[in-house]
Length: 144
Image (tube, rainbow, N blue to C red; front, side, top):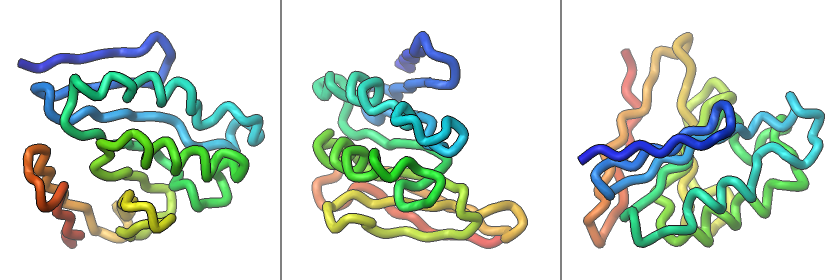
């Protein structure tokens, strides 16, 4: 059964697939809001993952990675902590840098996948294992 949850705020969408994986799509382009402390909206994000009994894992999807100059530096560590403290984060996916990269940014067990751009002709192929105990996902970067 496919369940969809749509927040009341423009541009925020939560999708829950068969009670397995929750996708939290959120805005991280702080520069567009003059680094006013509201983007990303950590309170809203926390509310989307508080009911952990209803999903096996969570994938966070945004545009700007937290270690980028366009991300509000005052929110960088609280953002990383939120992803860690969720306890069910599979990975965080973003773009913006126009290159591909995969790894932990904060030595906290959370993997950040930065996808490339169409100009670089590389995409990320990700396989998620919500029920596995030994690994959460595989990711390969594939040229096209």
